[in-house]
Length: 88
Image 1 (cartoon, rainbow, N blue to C red):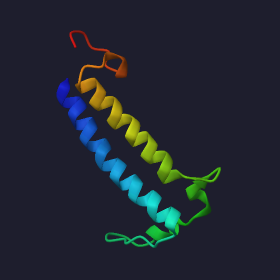
Image 2 (image 1 turned 135 degrees about the horizontal axis):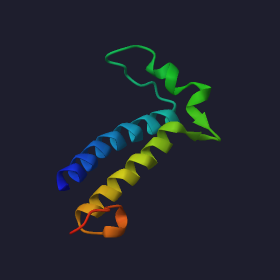
Image 3 (image 1 turned 90 degrees about the vertical axis):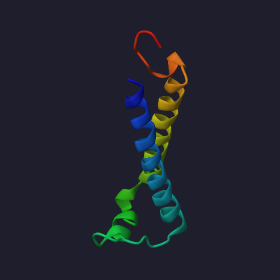
């Protein structure tokens, strides 16, 4: 079960880095580099990329940070962080 939390922490850390990058690029108005496909800047500058003045990438960053934090807290034995397993 611990491996699941380690994997969740690592994947959410990668997602957090990506979401933070996209948030910074959106806020600063920079054009992002697309290596695989084109149109990344068009998506980031779209009116649908912002809800109530908040970039959706920032919402994603907050979600990834929450998952990372809960996974790490659970790994270190904080039962209130989300582990519903016996014996932790």
